Image (cartoon, rainbow, N blue to C red; front, side, top):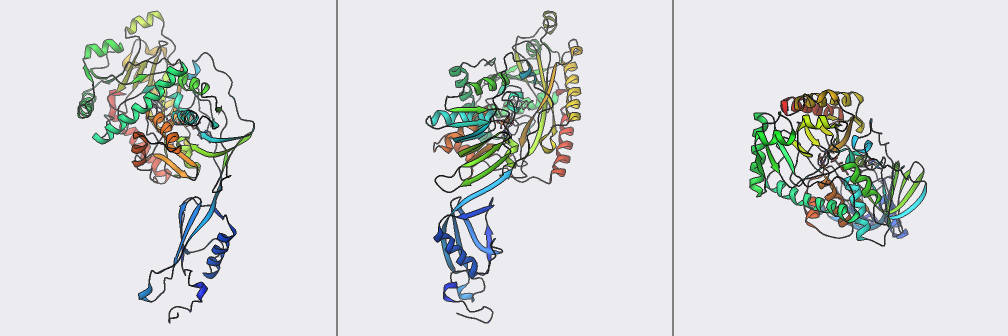
Length: 541
Ligand SMILES: Cc1cc2nc3c(=O)[nH]c(=O)nc-3n(C[C@H](O)[C@H](O)[C@H](O)COP(=O)(O)OP(=O)(O)OC[C@H]3O[C@@H](n4cnc5c(N)ncnc54)[C@H](O)[C@@H]3O)c2cc1C
């Protein structure tokens, strides 16, 4: 067949397109796995004059990581034959990809929760080569519970959990220790979502909370577990208005809560700062470092845990039945049939969702234990947890070991790293918050101050599912990770083993994180927004 604007096509070329378009996310190399497939593909490439990396124009679509689908059509055909499919091949292939991943930055300071634990054994790090069925990268709320669930549901398999730092001194162990049952989105001043979001978040959090509770009960973890609920407490009229909006969201959900008068909240906290509060009973308070540390040490026997073992390079290899992904660490390597990326923002350096993470730090401080006379001055309840009425305000706890804990300030973490000046600024803000609440005690200052990273996306999206062949991932808790992160990690394990659950259904429908603006613009935007919101929160800080 020939036309004036189209050269003659030899019969064996009829299969092949003139213009080749590659649509292949995440593709570095494809090795066609059978010689027949290779022959077909080279014939295709040769006939179309495509260069070896296929140049412009073959229409290649990935079916999955083990198969590619090639369709080819002649683009310069007479009108009557335009768009006609001339080739339609499915070719088996193998997916390989090698990536060096950036170092996880050491934290600027040890968290007070970790520093005040009595028994800390040295980290067990990986030296040498190991092989396993399931490798979980990241020992935060997500990774720890993903690994535990995999080990439970697949008892004949081998599970390896690695973390770059100490489990308990990572972001998960550095948090405020509120295992929250309700929707809690710090982007909204009153924390609530719309009715669907509130319902889904509640169900996810219940799943996570139940799993944490089962660890505490079955593994006998001492983590100062206290089902005492939380007080959303306002210090200003604006804060009180936020509480009304939060109450409305709870009414719509049919959730229990109660109003707490000025006198009551002042008696509970020992602070004249607060003017009203809303008590939500379903939250558990715990000592996060103790929980993480001990849960990691009481994993099922088919799970090995390595700390201070950052993955520095990953070689994905999937497609053949005997394929194994390989992760390199400073002194060893791990071959795994399946990898689970639970390393929050760092996941974006592992070849997935590049440029989507907005890394933030928030900061906390802990006093030394109060003396008897200071406790008398305080005159408060033995333990309590306060959530600020404005999400940019100050979180406050009195801990089981009679210390005061405060958290506030968000800052952009360029390259996933907190700066010394951000930590110092947060310490100054913590001191102001201390003076506002406890002027008589504030001169004692703090014994420990620290920051921890959390990751969000511009569109509030999150990661959940199979990211590549035998590569699973979950992340982006948007600031609340205890119950939610636990549910995400547990659900990821269940999903990868073919189970179904309400949490899986919800998470699979959630939008993925979108690509943010260039980091310089994001940084500027985050710094301006967080300063503005901190200022606007006024005395709630
Ligand atoms: C001060 C503070 C207070 C908070 N308070 C609360 C609270 O009260 N309630 C609540 O629900 N949430 C709270 N949060 C948020 C919560 O801590 C996070 O949302 C949560 O830790 C996220 O869990 P995660 O498992 O996704 O990630 P992370 O806890 O960040 O864990 C990810 C892990 O991956 C590891 N990792 C990364 N890269 C690699 C690599 N290459 N190799 C090996 N390991 C790697 C890291 O070392 C890290 O331990 C708070 C956070 C902070 C900082």
